[in-house]
Length: 154
Ligand SMILES: [Fe+2]
Ligand SMILES: [Fe+2]
Image (cartoon, rainbow, N blue to C red; front, top):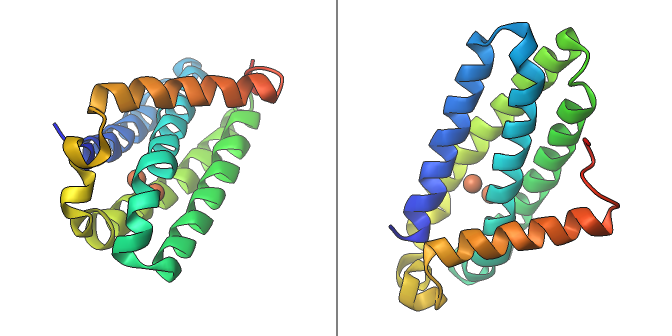
């Protein structure tokens, strides 16, 4: 698997988690919100650290600035969702809003960004396997959380 396939797979996994959330009983929803936050944060970290630096050359500064704004919006929605996780009606609204944004993110990226990266996004181009990237992204994420004083939702 290369990193483009991994990004698309993570988009699909996120959409599947939203579908699980929609059908889940109330008492399972707060835990699913945490799973969603973790999966999406890992995904955004991988893109920001490994995809966007090479995308900058492939798609140009303007498209990248748009993608970065989109990430900021997604992070705000993730935080709103986490803060709402013990208030089920508010959680439902927050998850719906996040789902819409994630679906747009996935569609836009799969259409306009990922197909244009070419050989830069292969294992050789990046100098790292997908497994290594996932491992490092998880470390970056843990470090960022530690700097913020621990899990924001703990
Ligand atoms: Fe992205
Ligand atoms: Fe993405």
